[in-house]
Image (cartoon, rainbow, N blue to C red; front, side):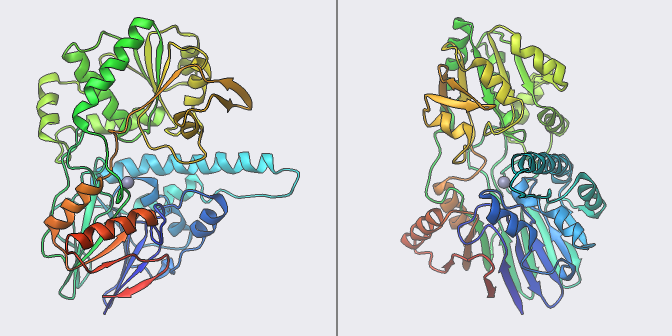
Length: 460
Ligand SMILES: [Zn+2]
C-alpha cells in the first residue's frame, strides 16, 4: 500500500510545499515549506500540520527556498527527530535561509504587535533562531545520482532540477513503484545553471506548475537590454536600483554585469551589493563554481575570467554604516539590495533616496506579489508611500521578464514528454495555471492528470 497526502502547494496554493508518502515501510515527507501570503490563513496552515510529525520517518528536501524548507523548525518544535536528507549545497544555503527566516518572523511579530498594541491582538513568531538551530543536527547530506535508503524497503535518489544552486528532483522507489517529485524545476535555457535532468520509467510524477499558463521572455536578449539601461544611466550620471532576491537572482545579475564589463559593452561603473545575506550566499556560489549545477558556458567563462562574481570590483556591503554612506553618494552607480519585493530591508532607503530624480532607474528583475511596493511601482503608480510618507515616482521603472528560476509552460511540456510518466499530479501552481496546463497535456494526449486539493489523499 502506498498513499500520497498533499499537505501544501496543492489546491491552488503555490507555497507551503509538503507531500507525504505513506508506505508500509515508513512515512516520508517531501519538503517542509512555509505557506506565504494572506496572513490569517497562512498562519493557521503553518501552525497545524495535517499529519503528526512524530509519525514521520524522515524528510527529503528538494531545495533551499523558504516555501520548501521554512516549516522545518516547526517539525522540530513538534518533537520530530528523524533524518532530513538534502544535498550539500542545499544544506549550506538552507542554514542561511532558515536563520534569516527566524529573524524575519521575530521582526514581523514585533511590528504587528506594536501596531495592534491597543486592540489586544497579539501574535507570536512561528519559531525562533533557537528552534532553527535545533534542527540543523538532523540534516543528512547525500550526493546526487546514487540511491540511499531512509528506511529498509524504500530507496531515494536526487537528480539535478536546474532551479537554483543545489536544487534537486527526488526519485522514490518503493513496492515496484517509481515516484518522481520534481521539486521546482528550472528553465531549459538559463543564465548560468545547467537545465534539469530527466528520469524515465516513472509511474507517478508530482510536478510543479508555477508557470503552467505562462512563458518567459527570450533569455538571448538579456545582456543587450541590461547594457542599454546601464549605458544610458551612466551617461546621465544616475543610479540603478535593483531589488534583488538574495538567492540566485543577485548572483545572476552580477554575473551578467561581469560579462558586460569583460566584453567592454558597458563602462566601469561602481556596483554595490547591499545585503549581508546576499554576500554570504554569493560566497557559496563562488566557492562552488565547478559544481555539476553550473552550465558548461558558465564554467568556461569562469575558467577564463577567474572572477565571474566580480570580487575585484563589486563592493559587497555588510555593515549598516557602509550602507548608510550610499545614501549621500552621487551617481553613476548600481546598487543591488533586498528585499526583492521592496517590502522591507535596505532597498527601501535606496528607493526613497532615488525616487524623485528622473535620471535614476528602478530595475525590477523578479516576481512582485500583489500588494507589495514592488508591484505598485511595477504597475506604474505615480505616488507611493515609503516609511509612512508619500513620494512622487519620478524615476523610471523598468521590468525585465527574462529572469525566472521556474520552467515556463513549454519547458514543462517538454519535461513531461521526455519523462513520459504513467500518471501526473499537478502541484505548486495557482488553479488557472494547473487547469491550463492540464488542458495542454490533454491536447498532447497525456490523460492521467490529477489536481490534488489541500489535505487530499490518494492511494496509488
Ligand atoms: Zn523554489
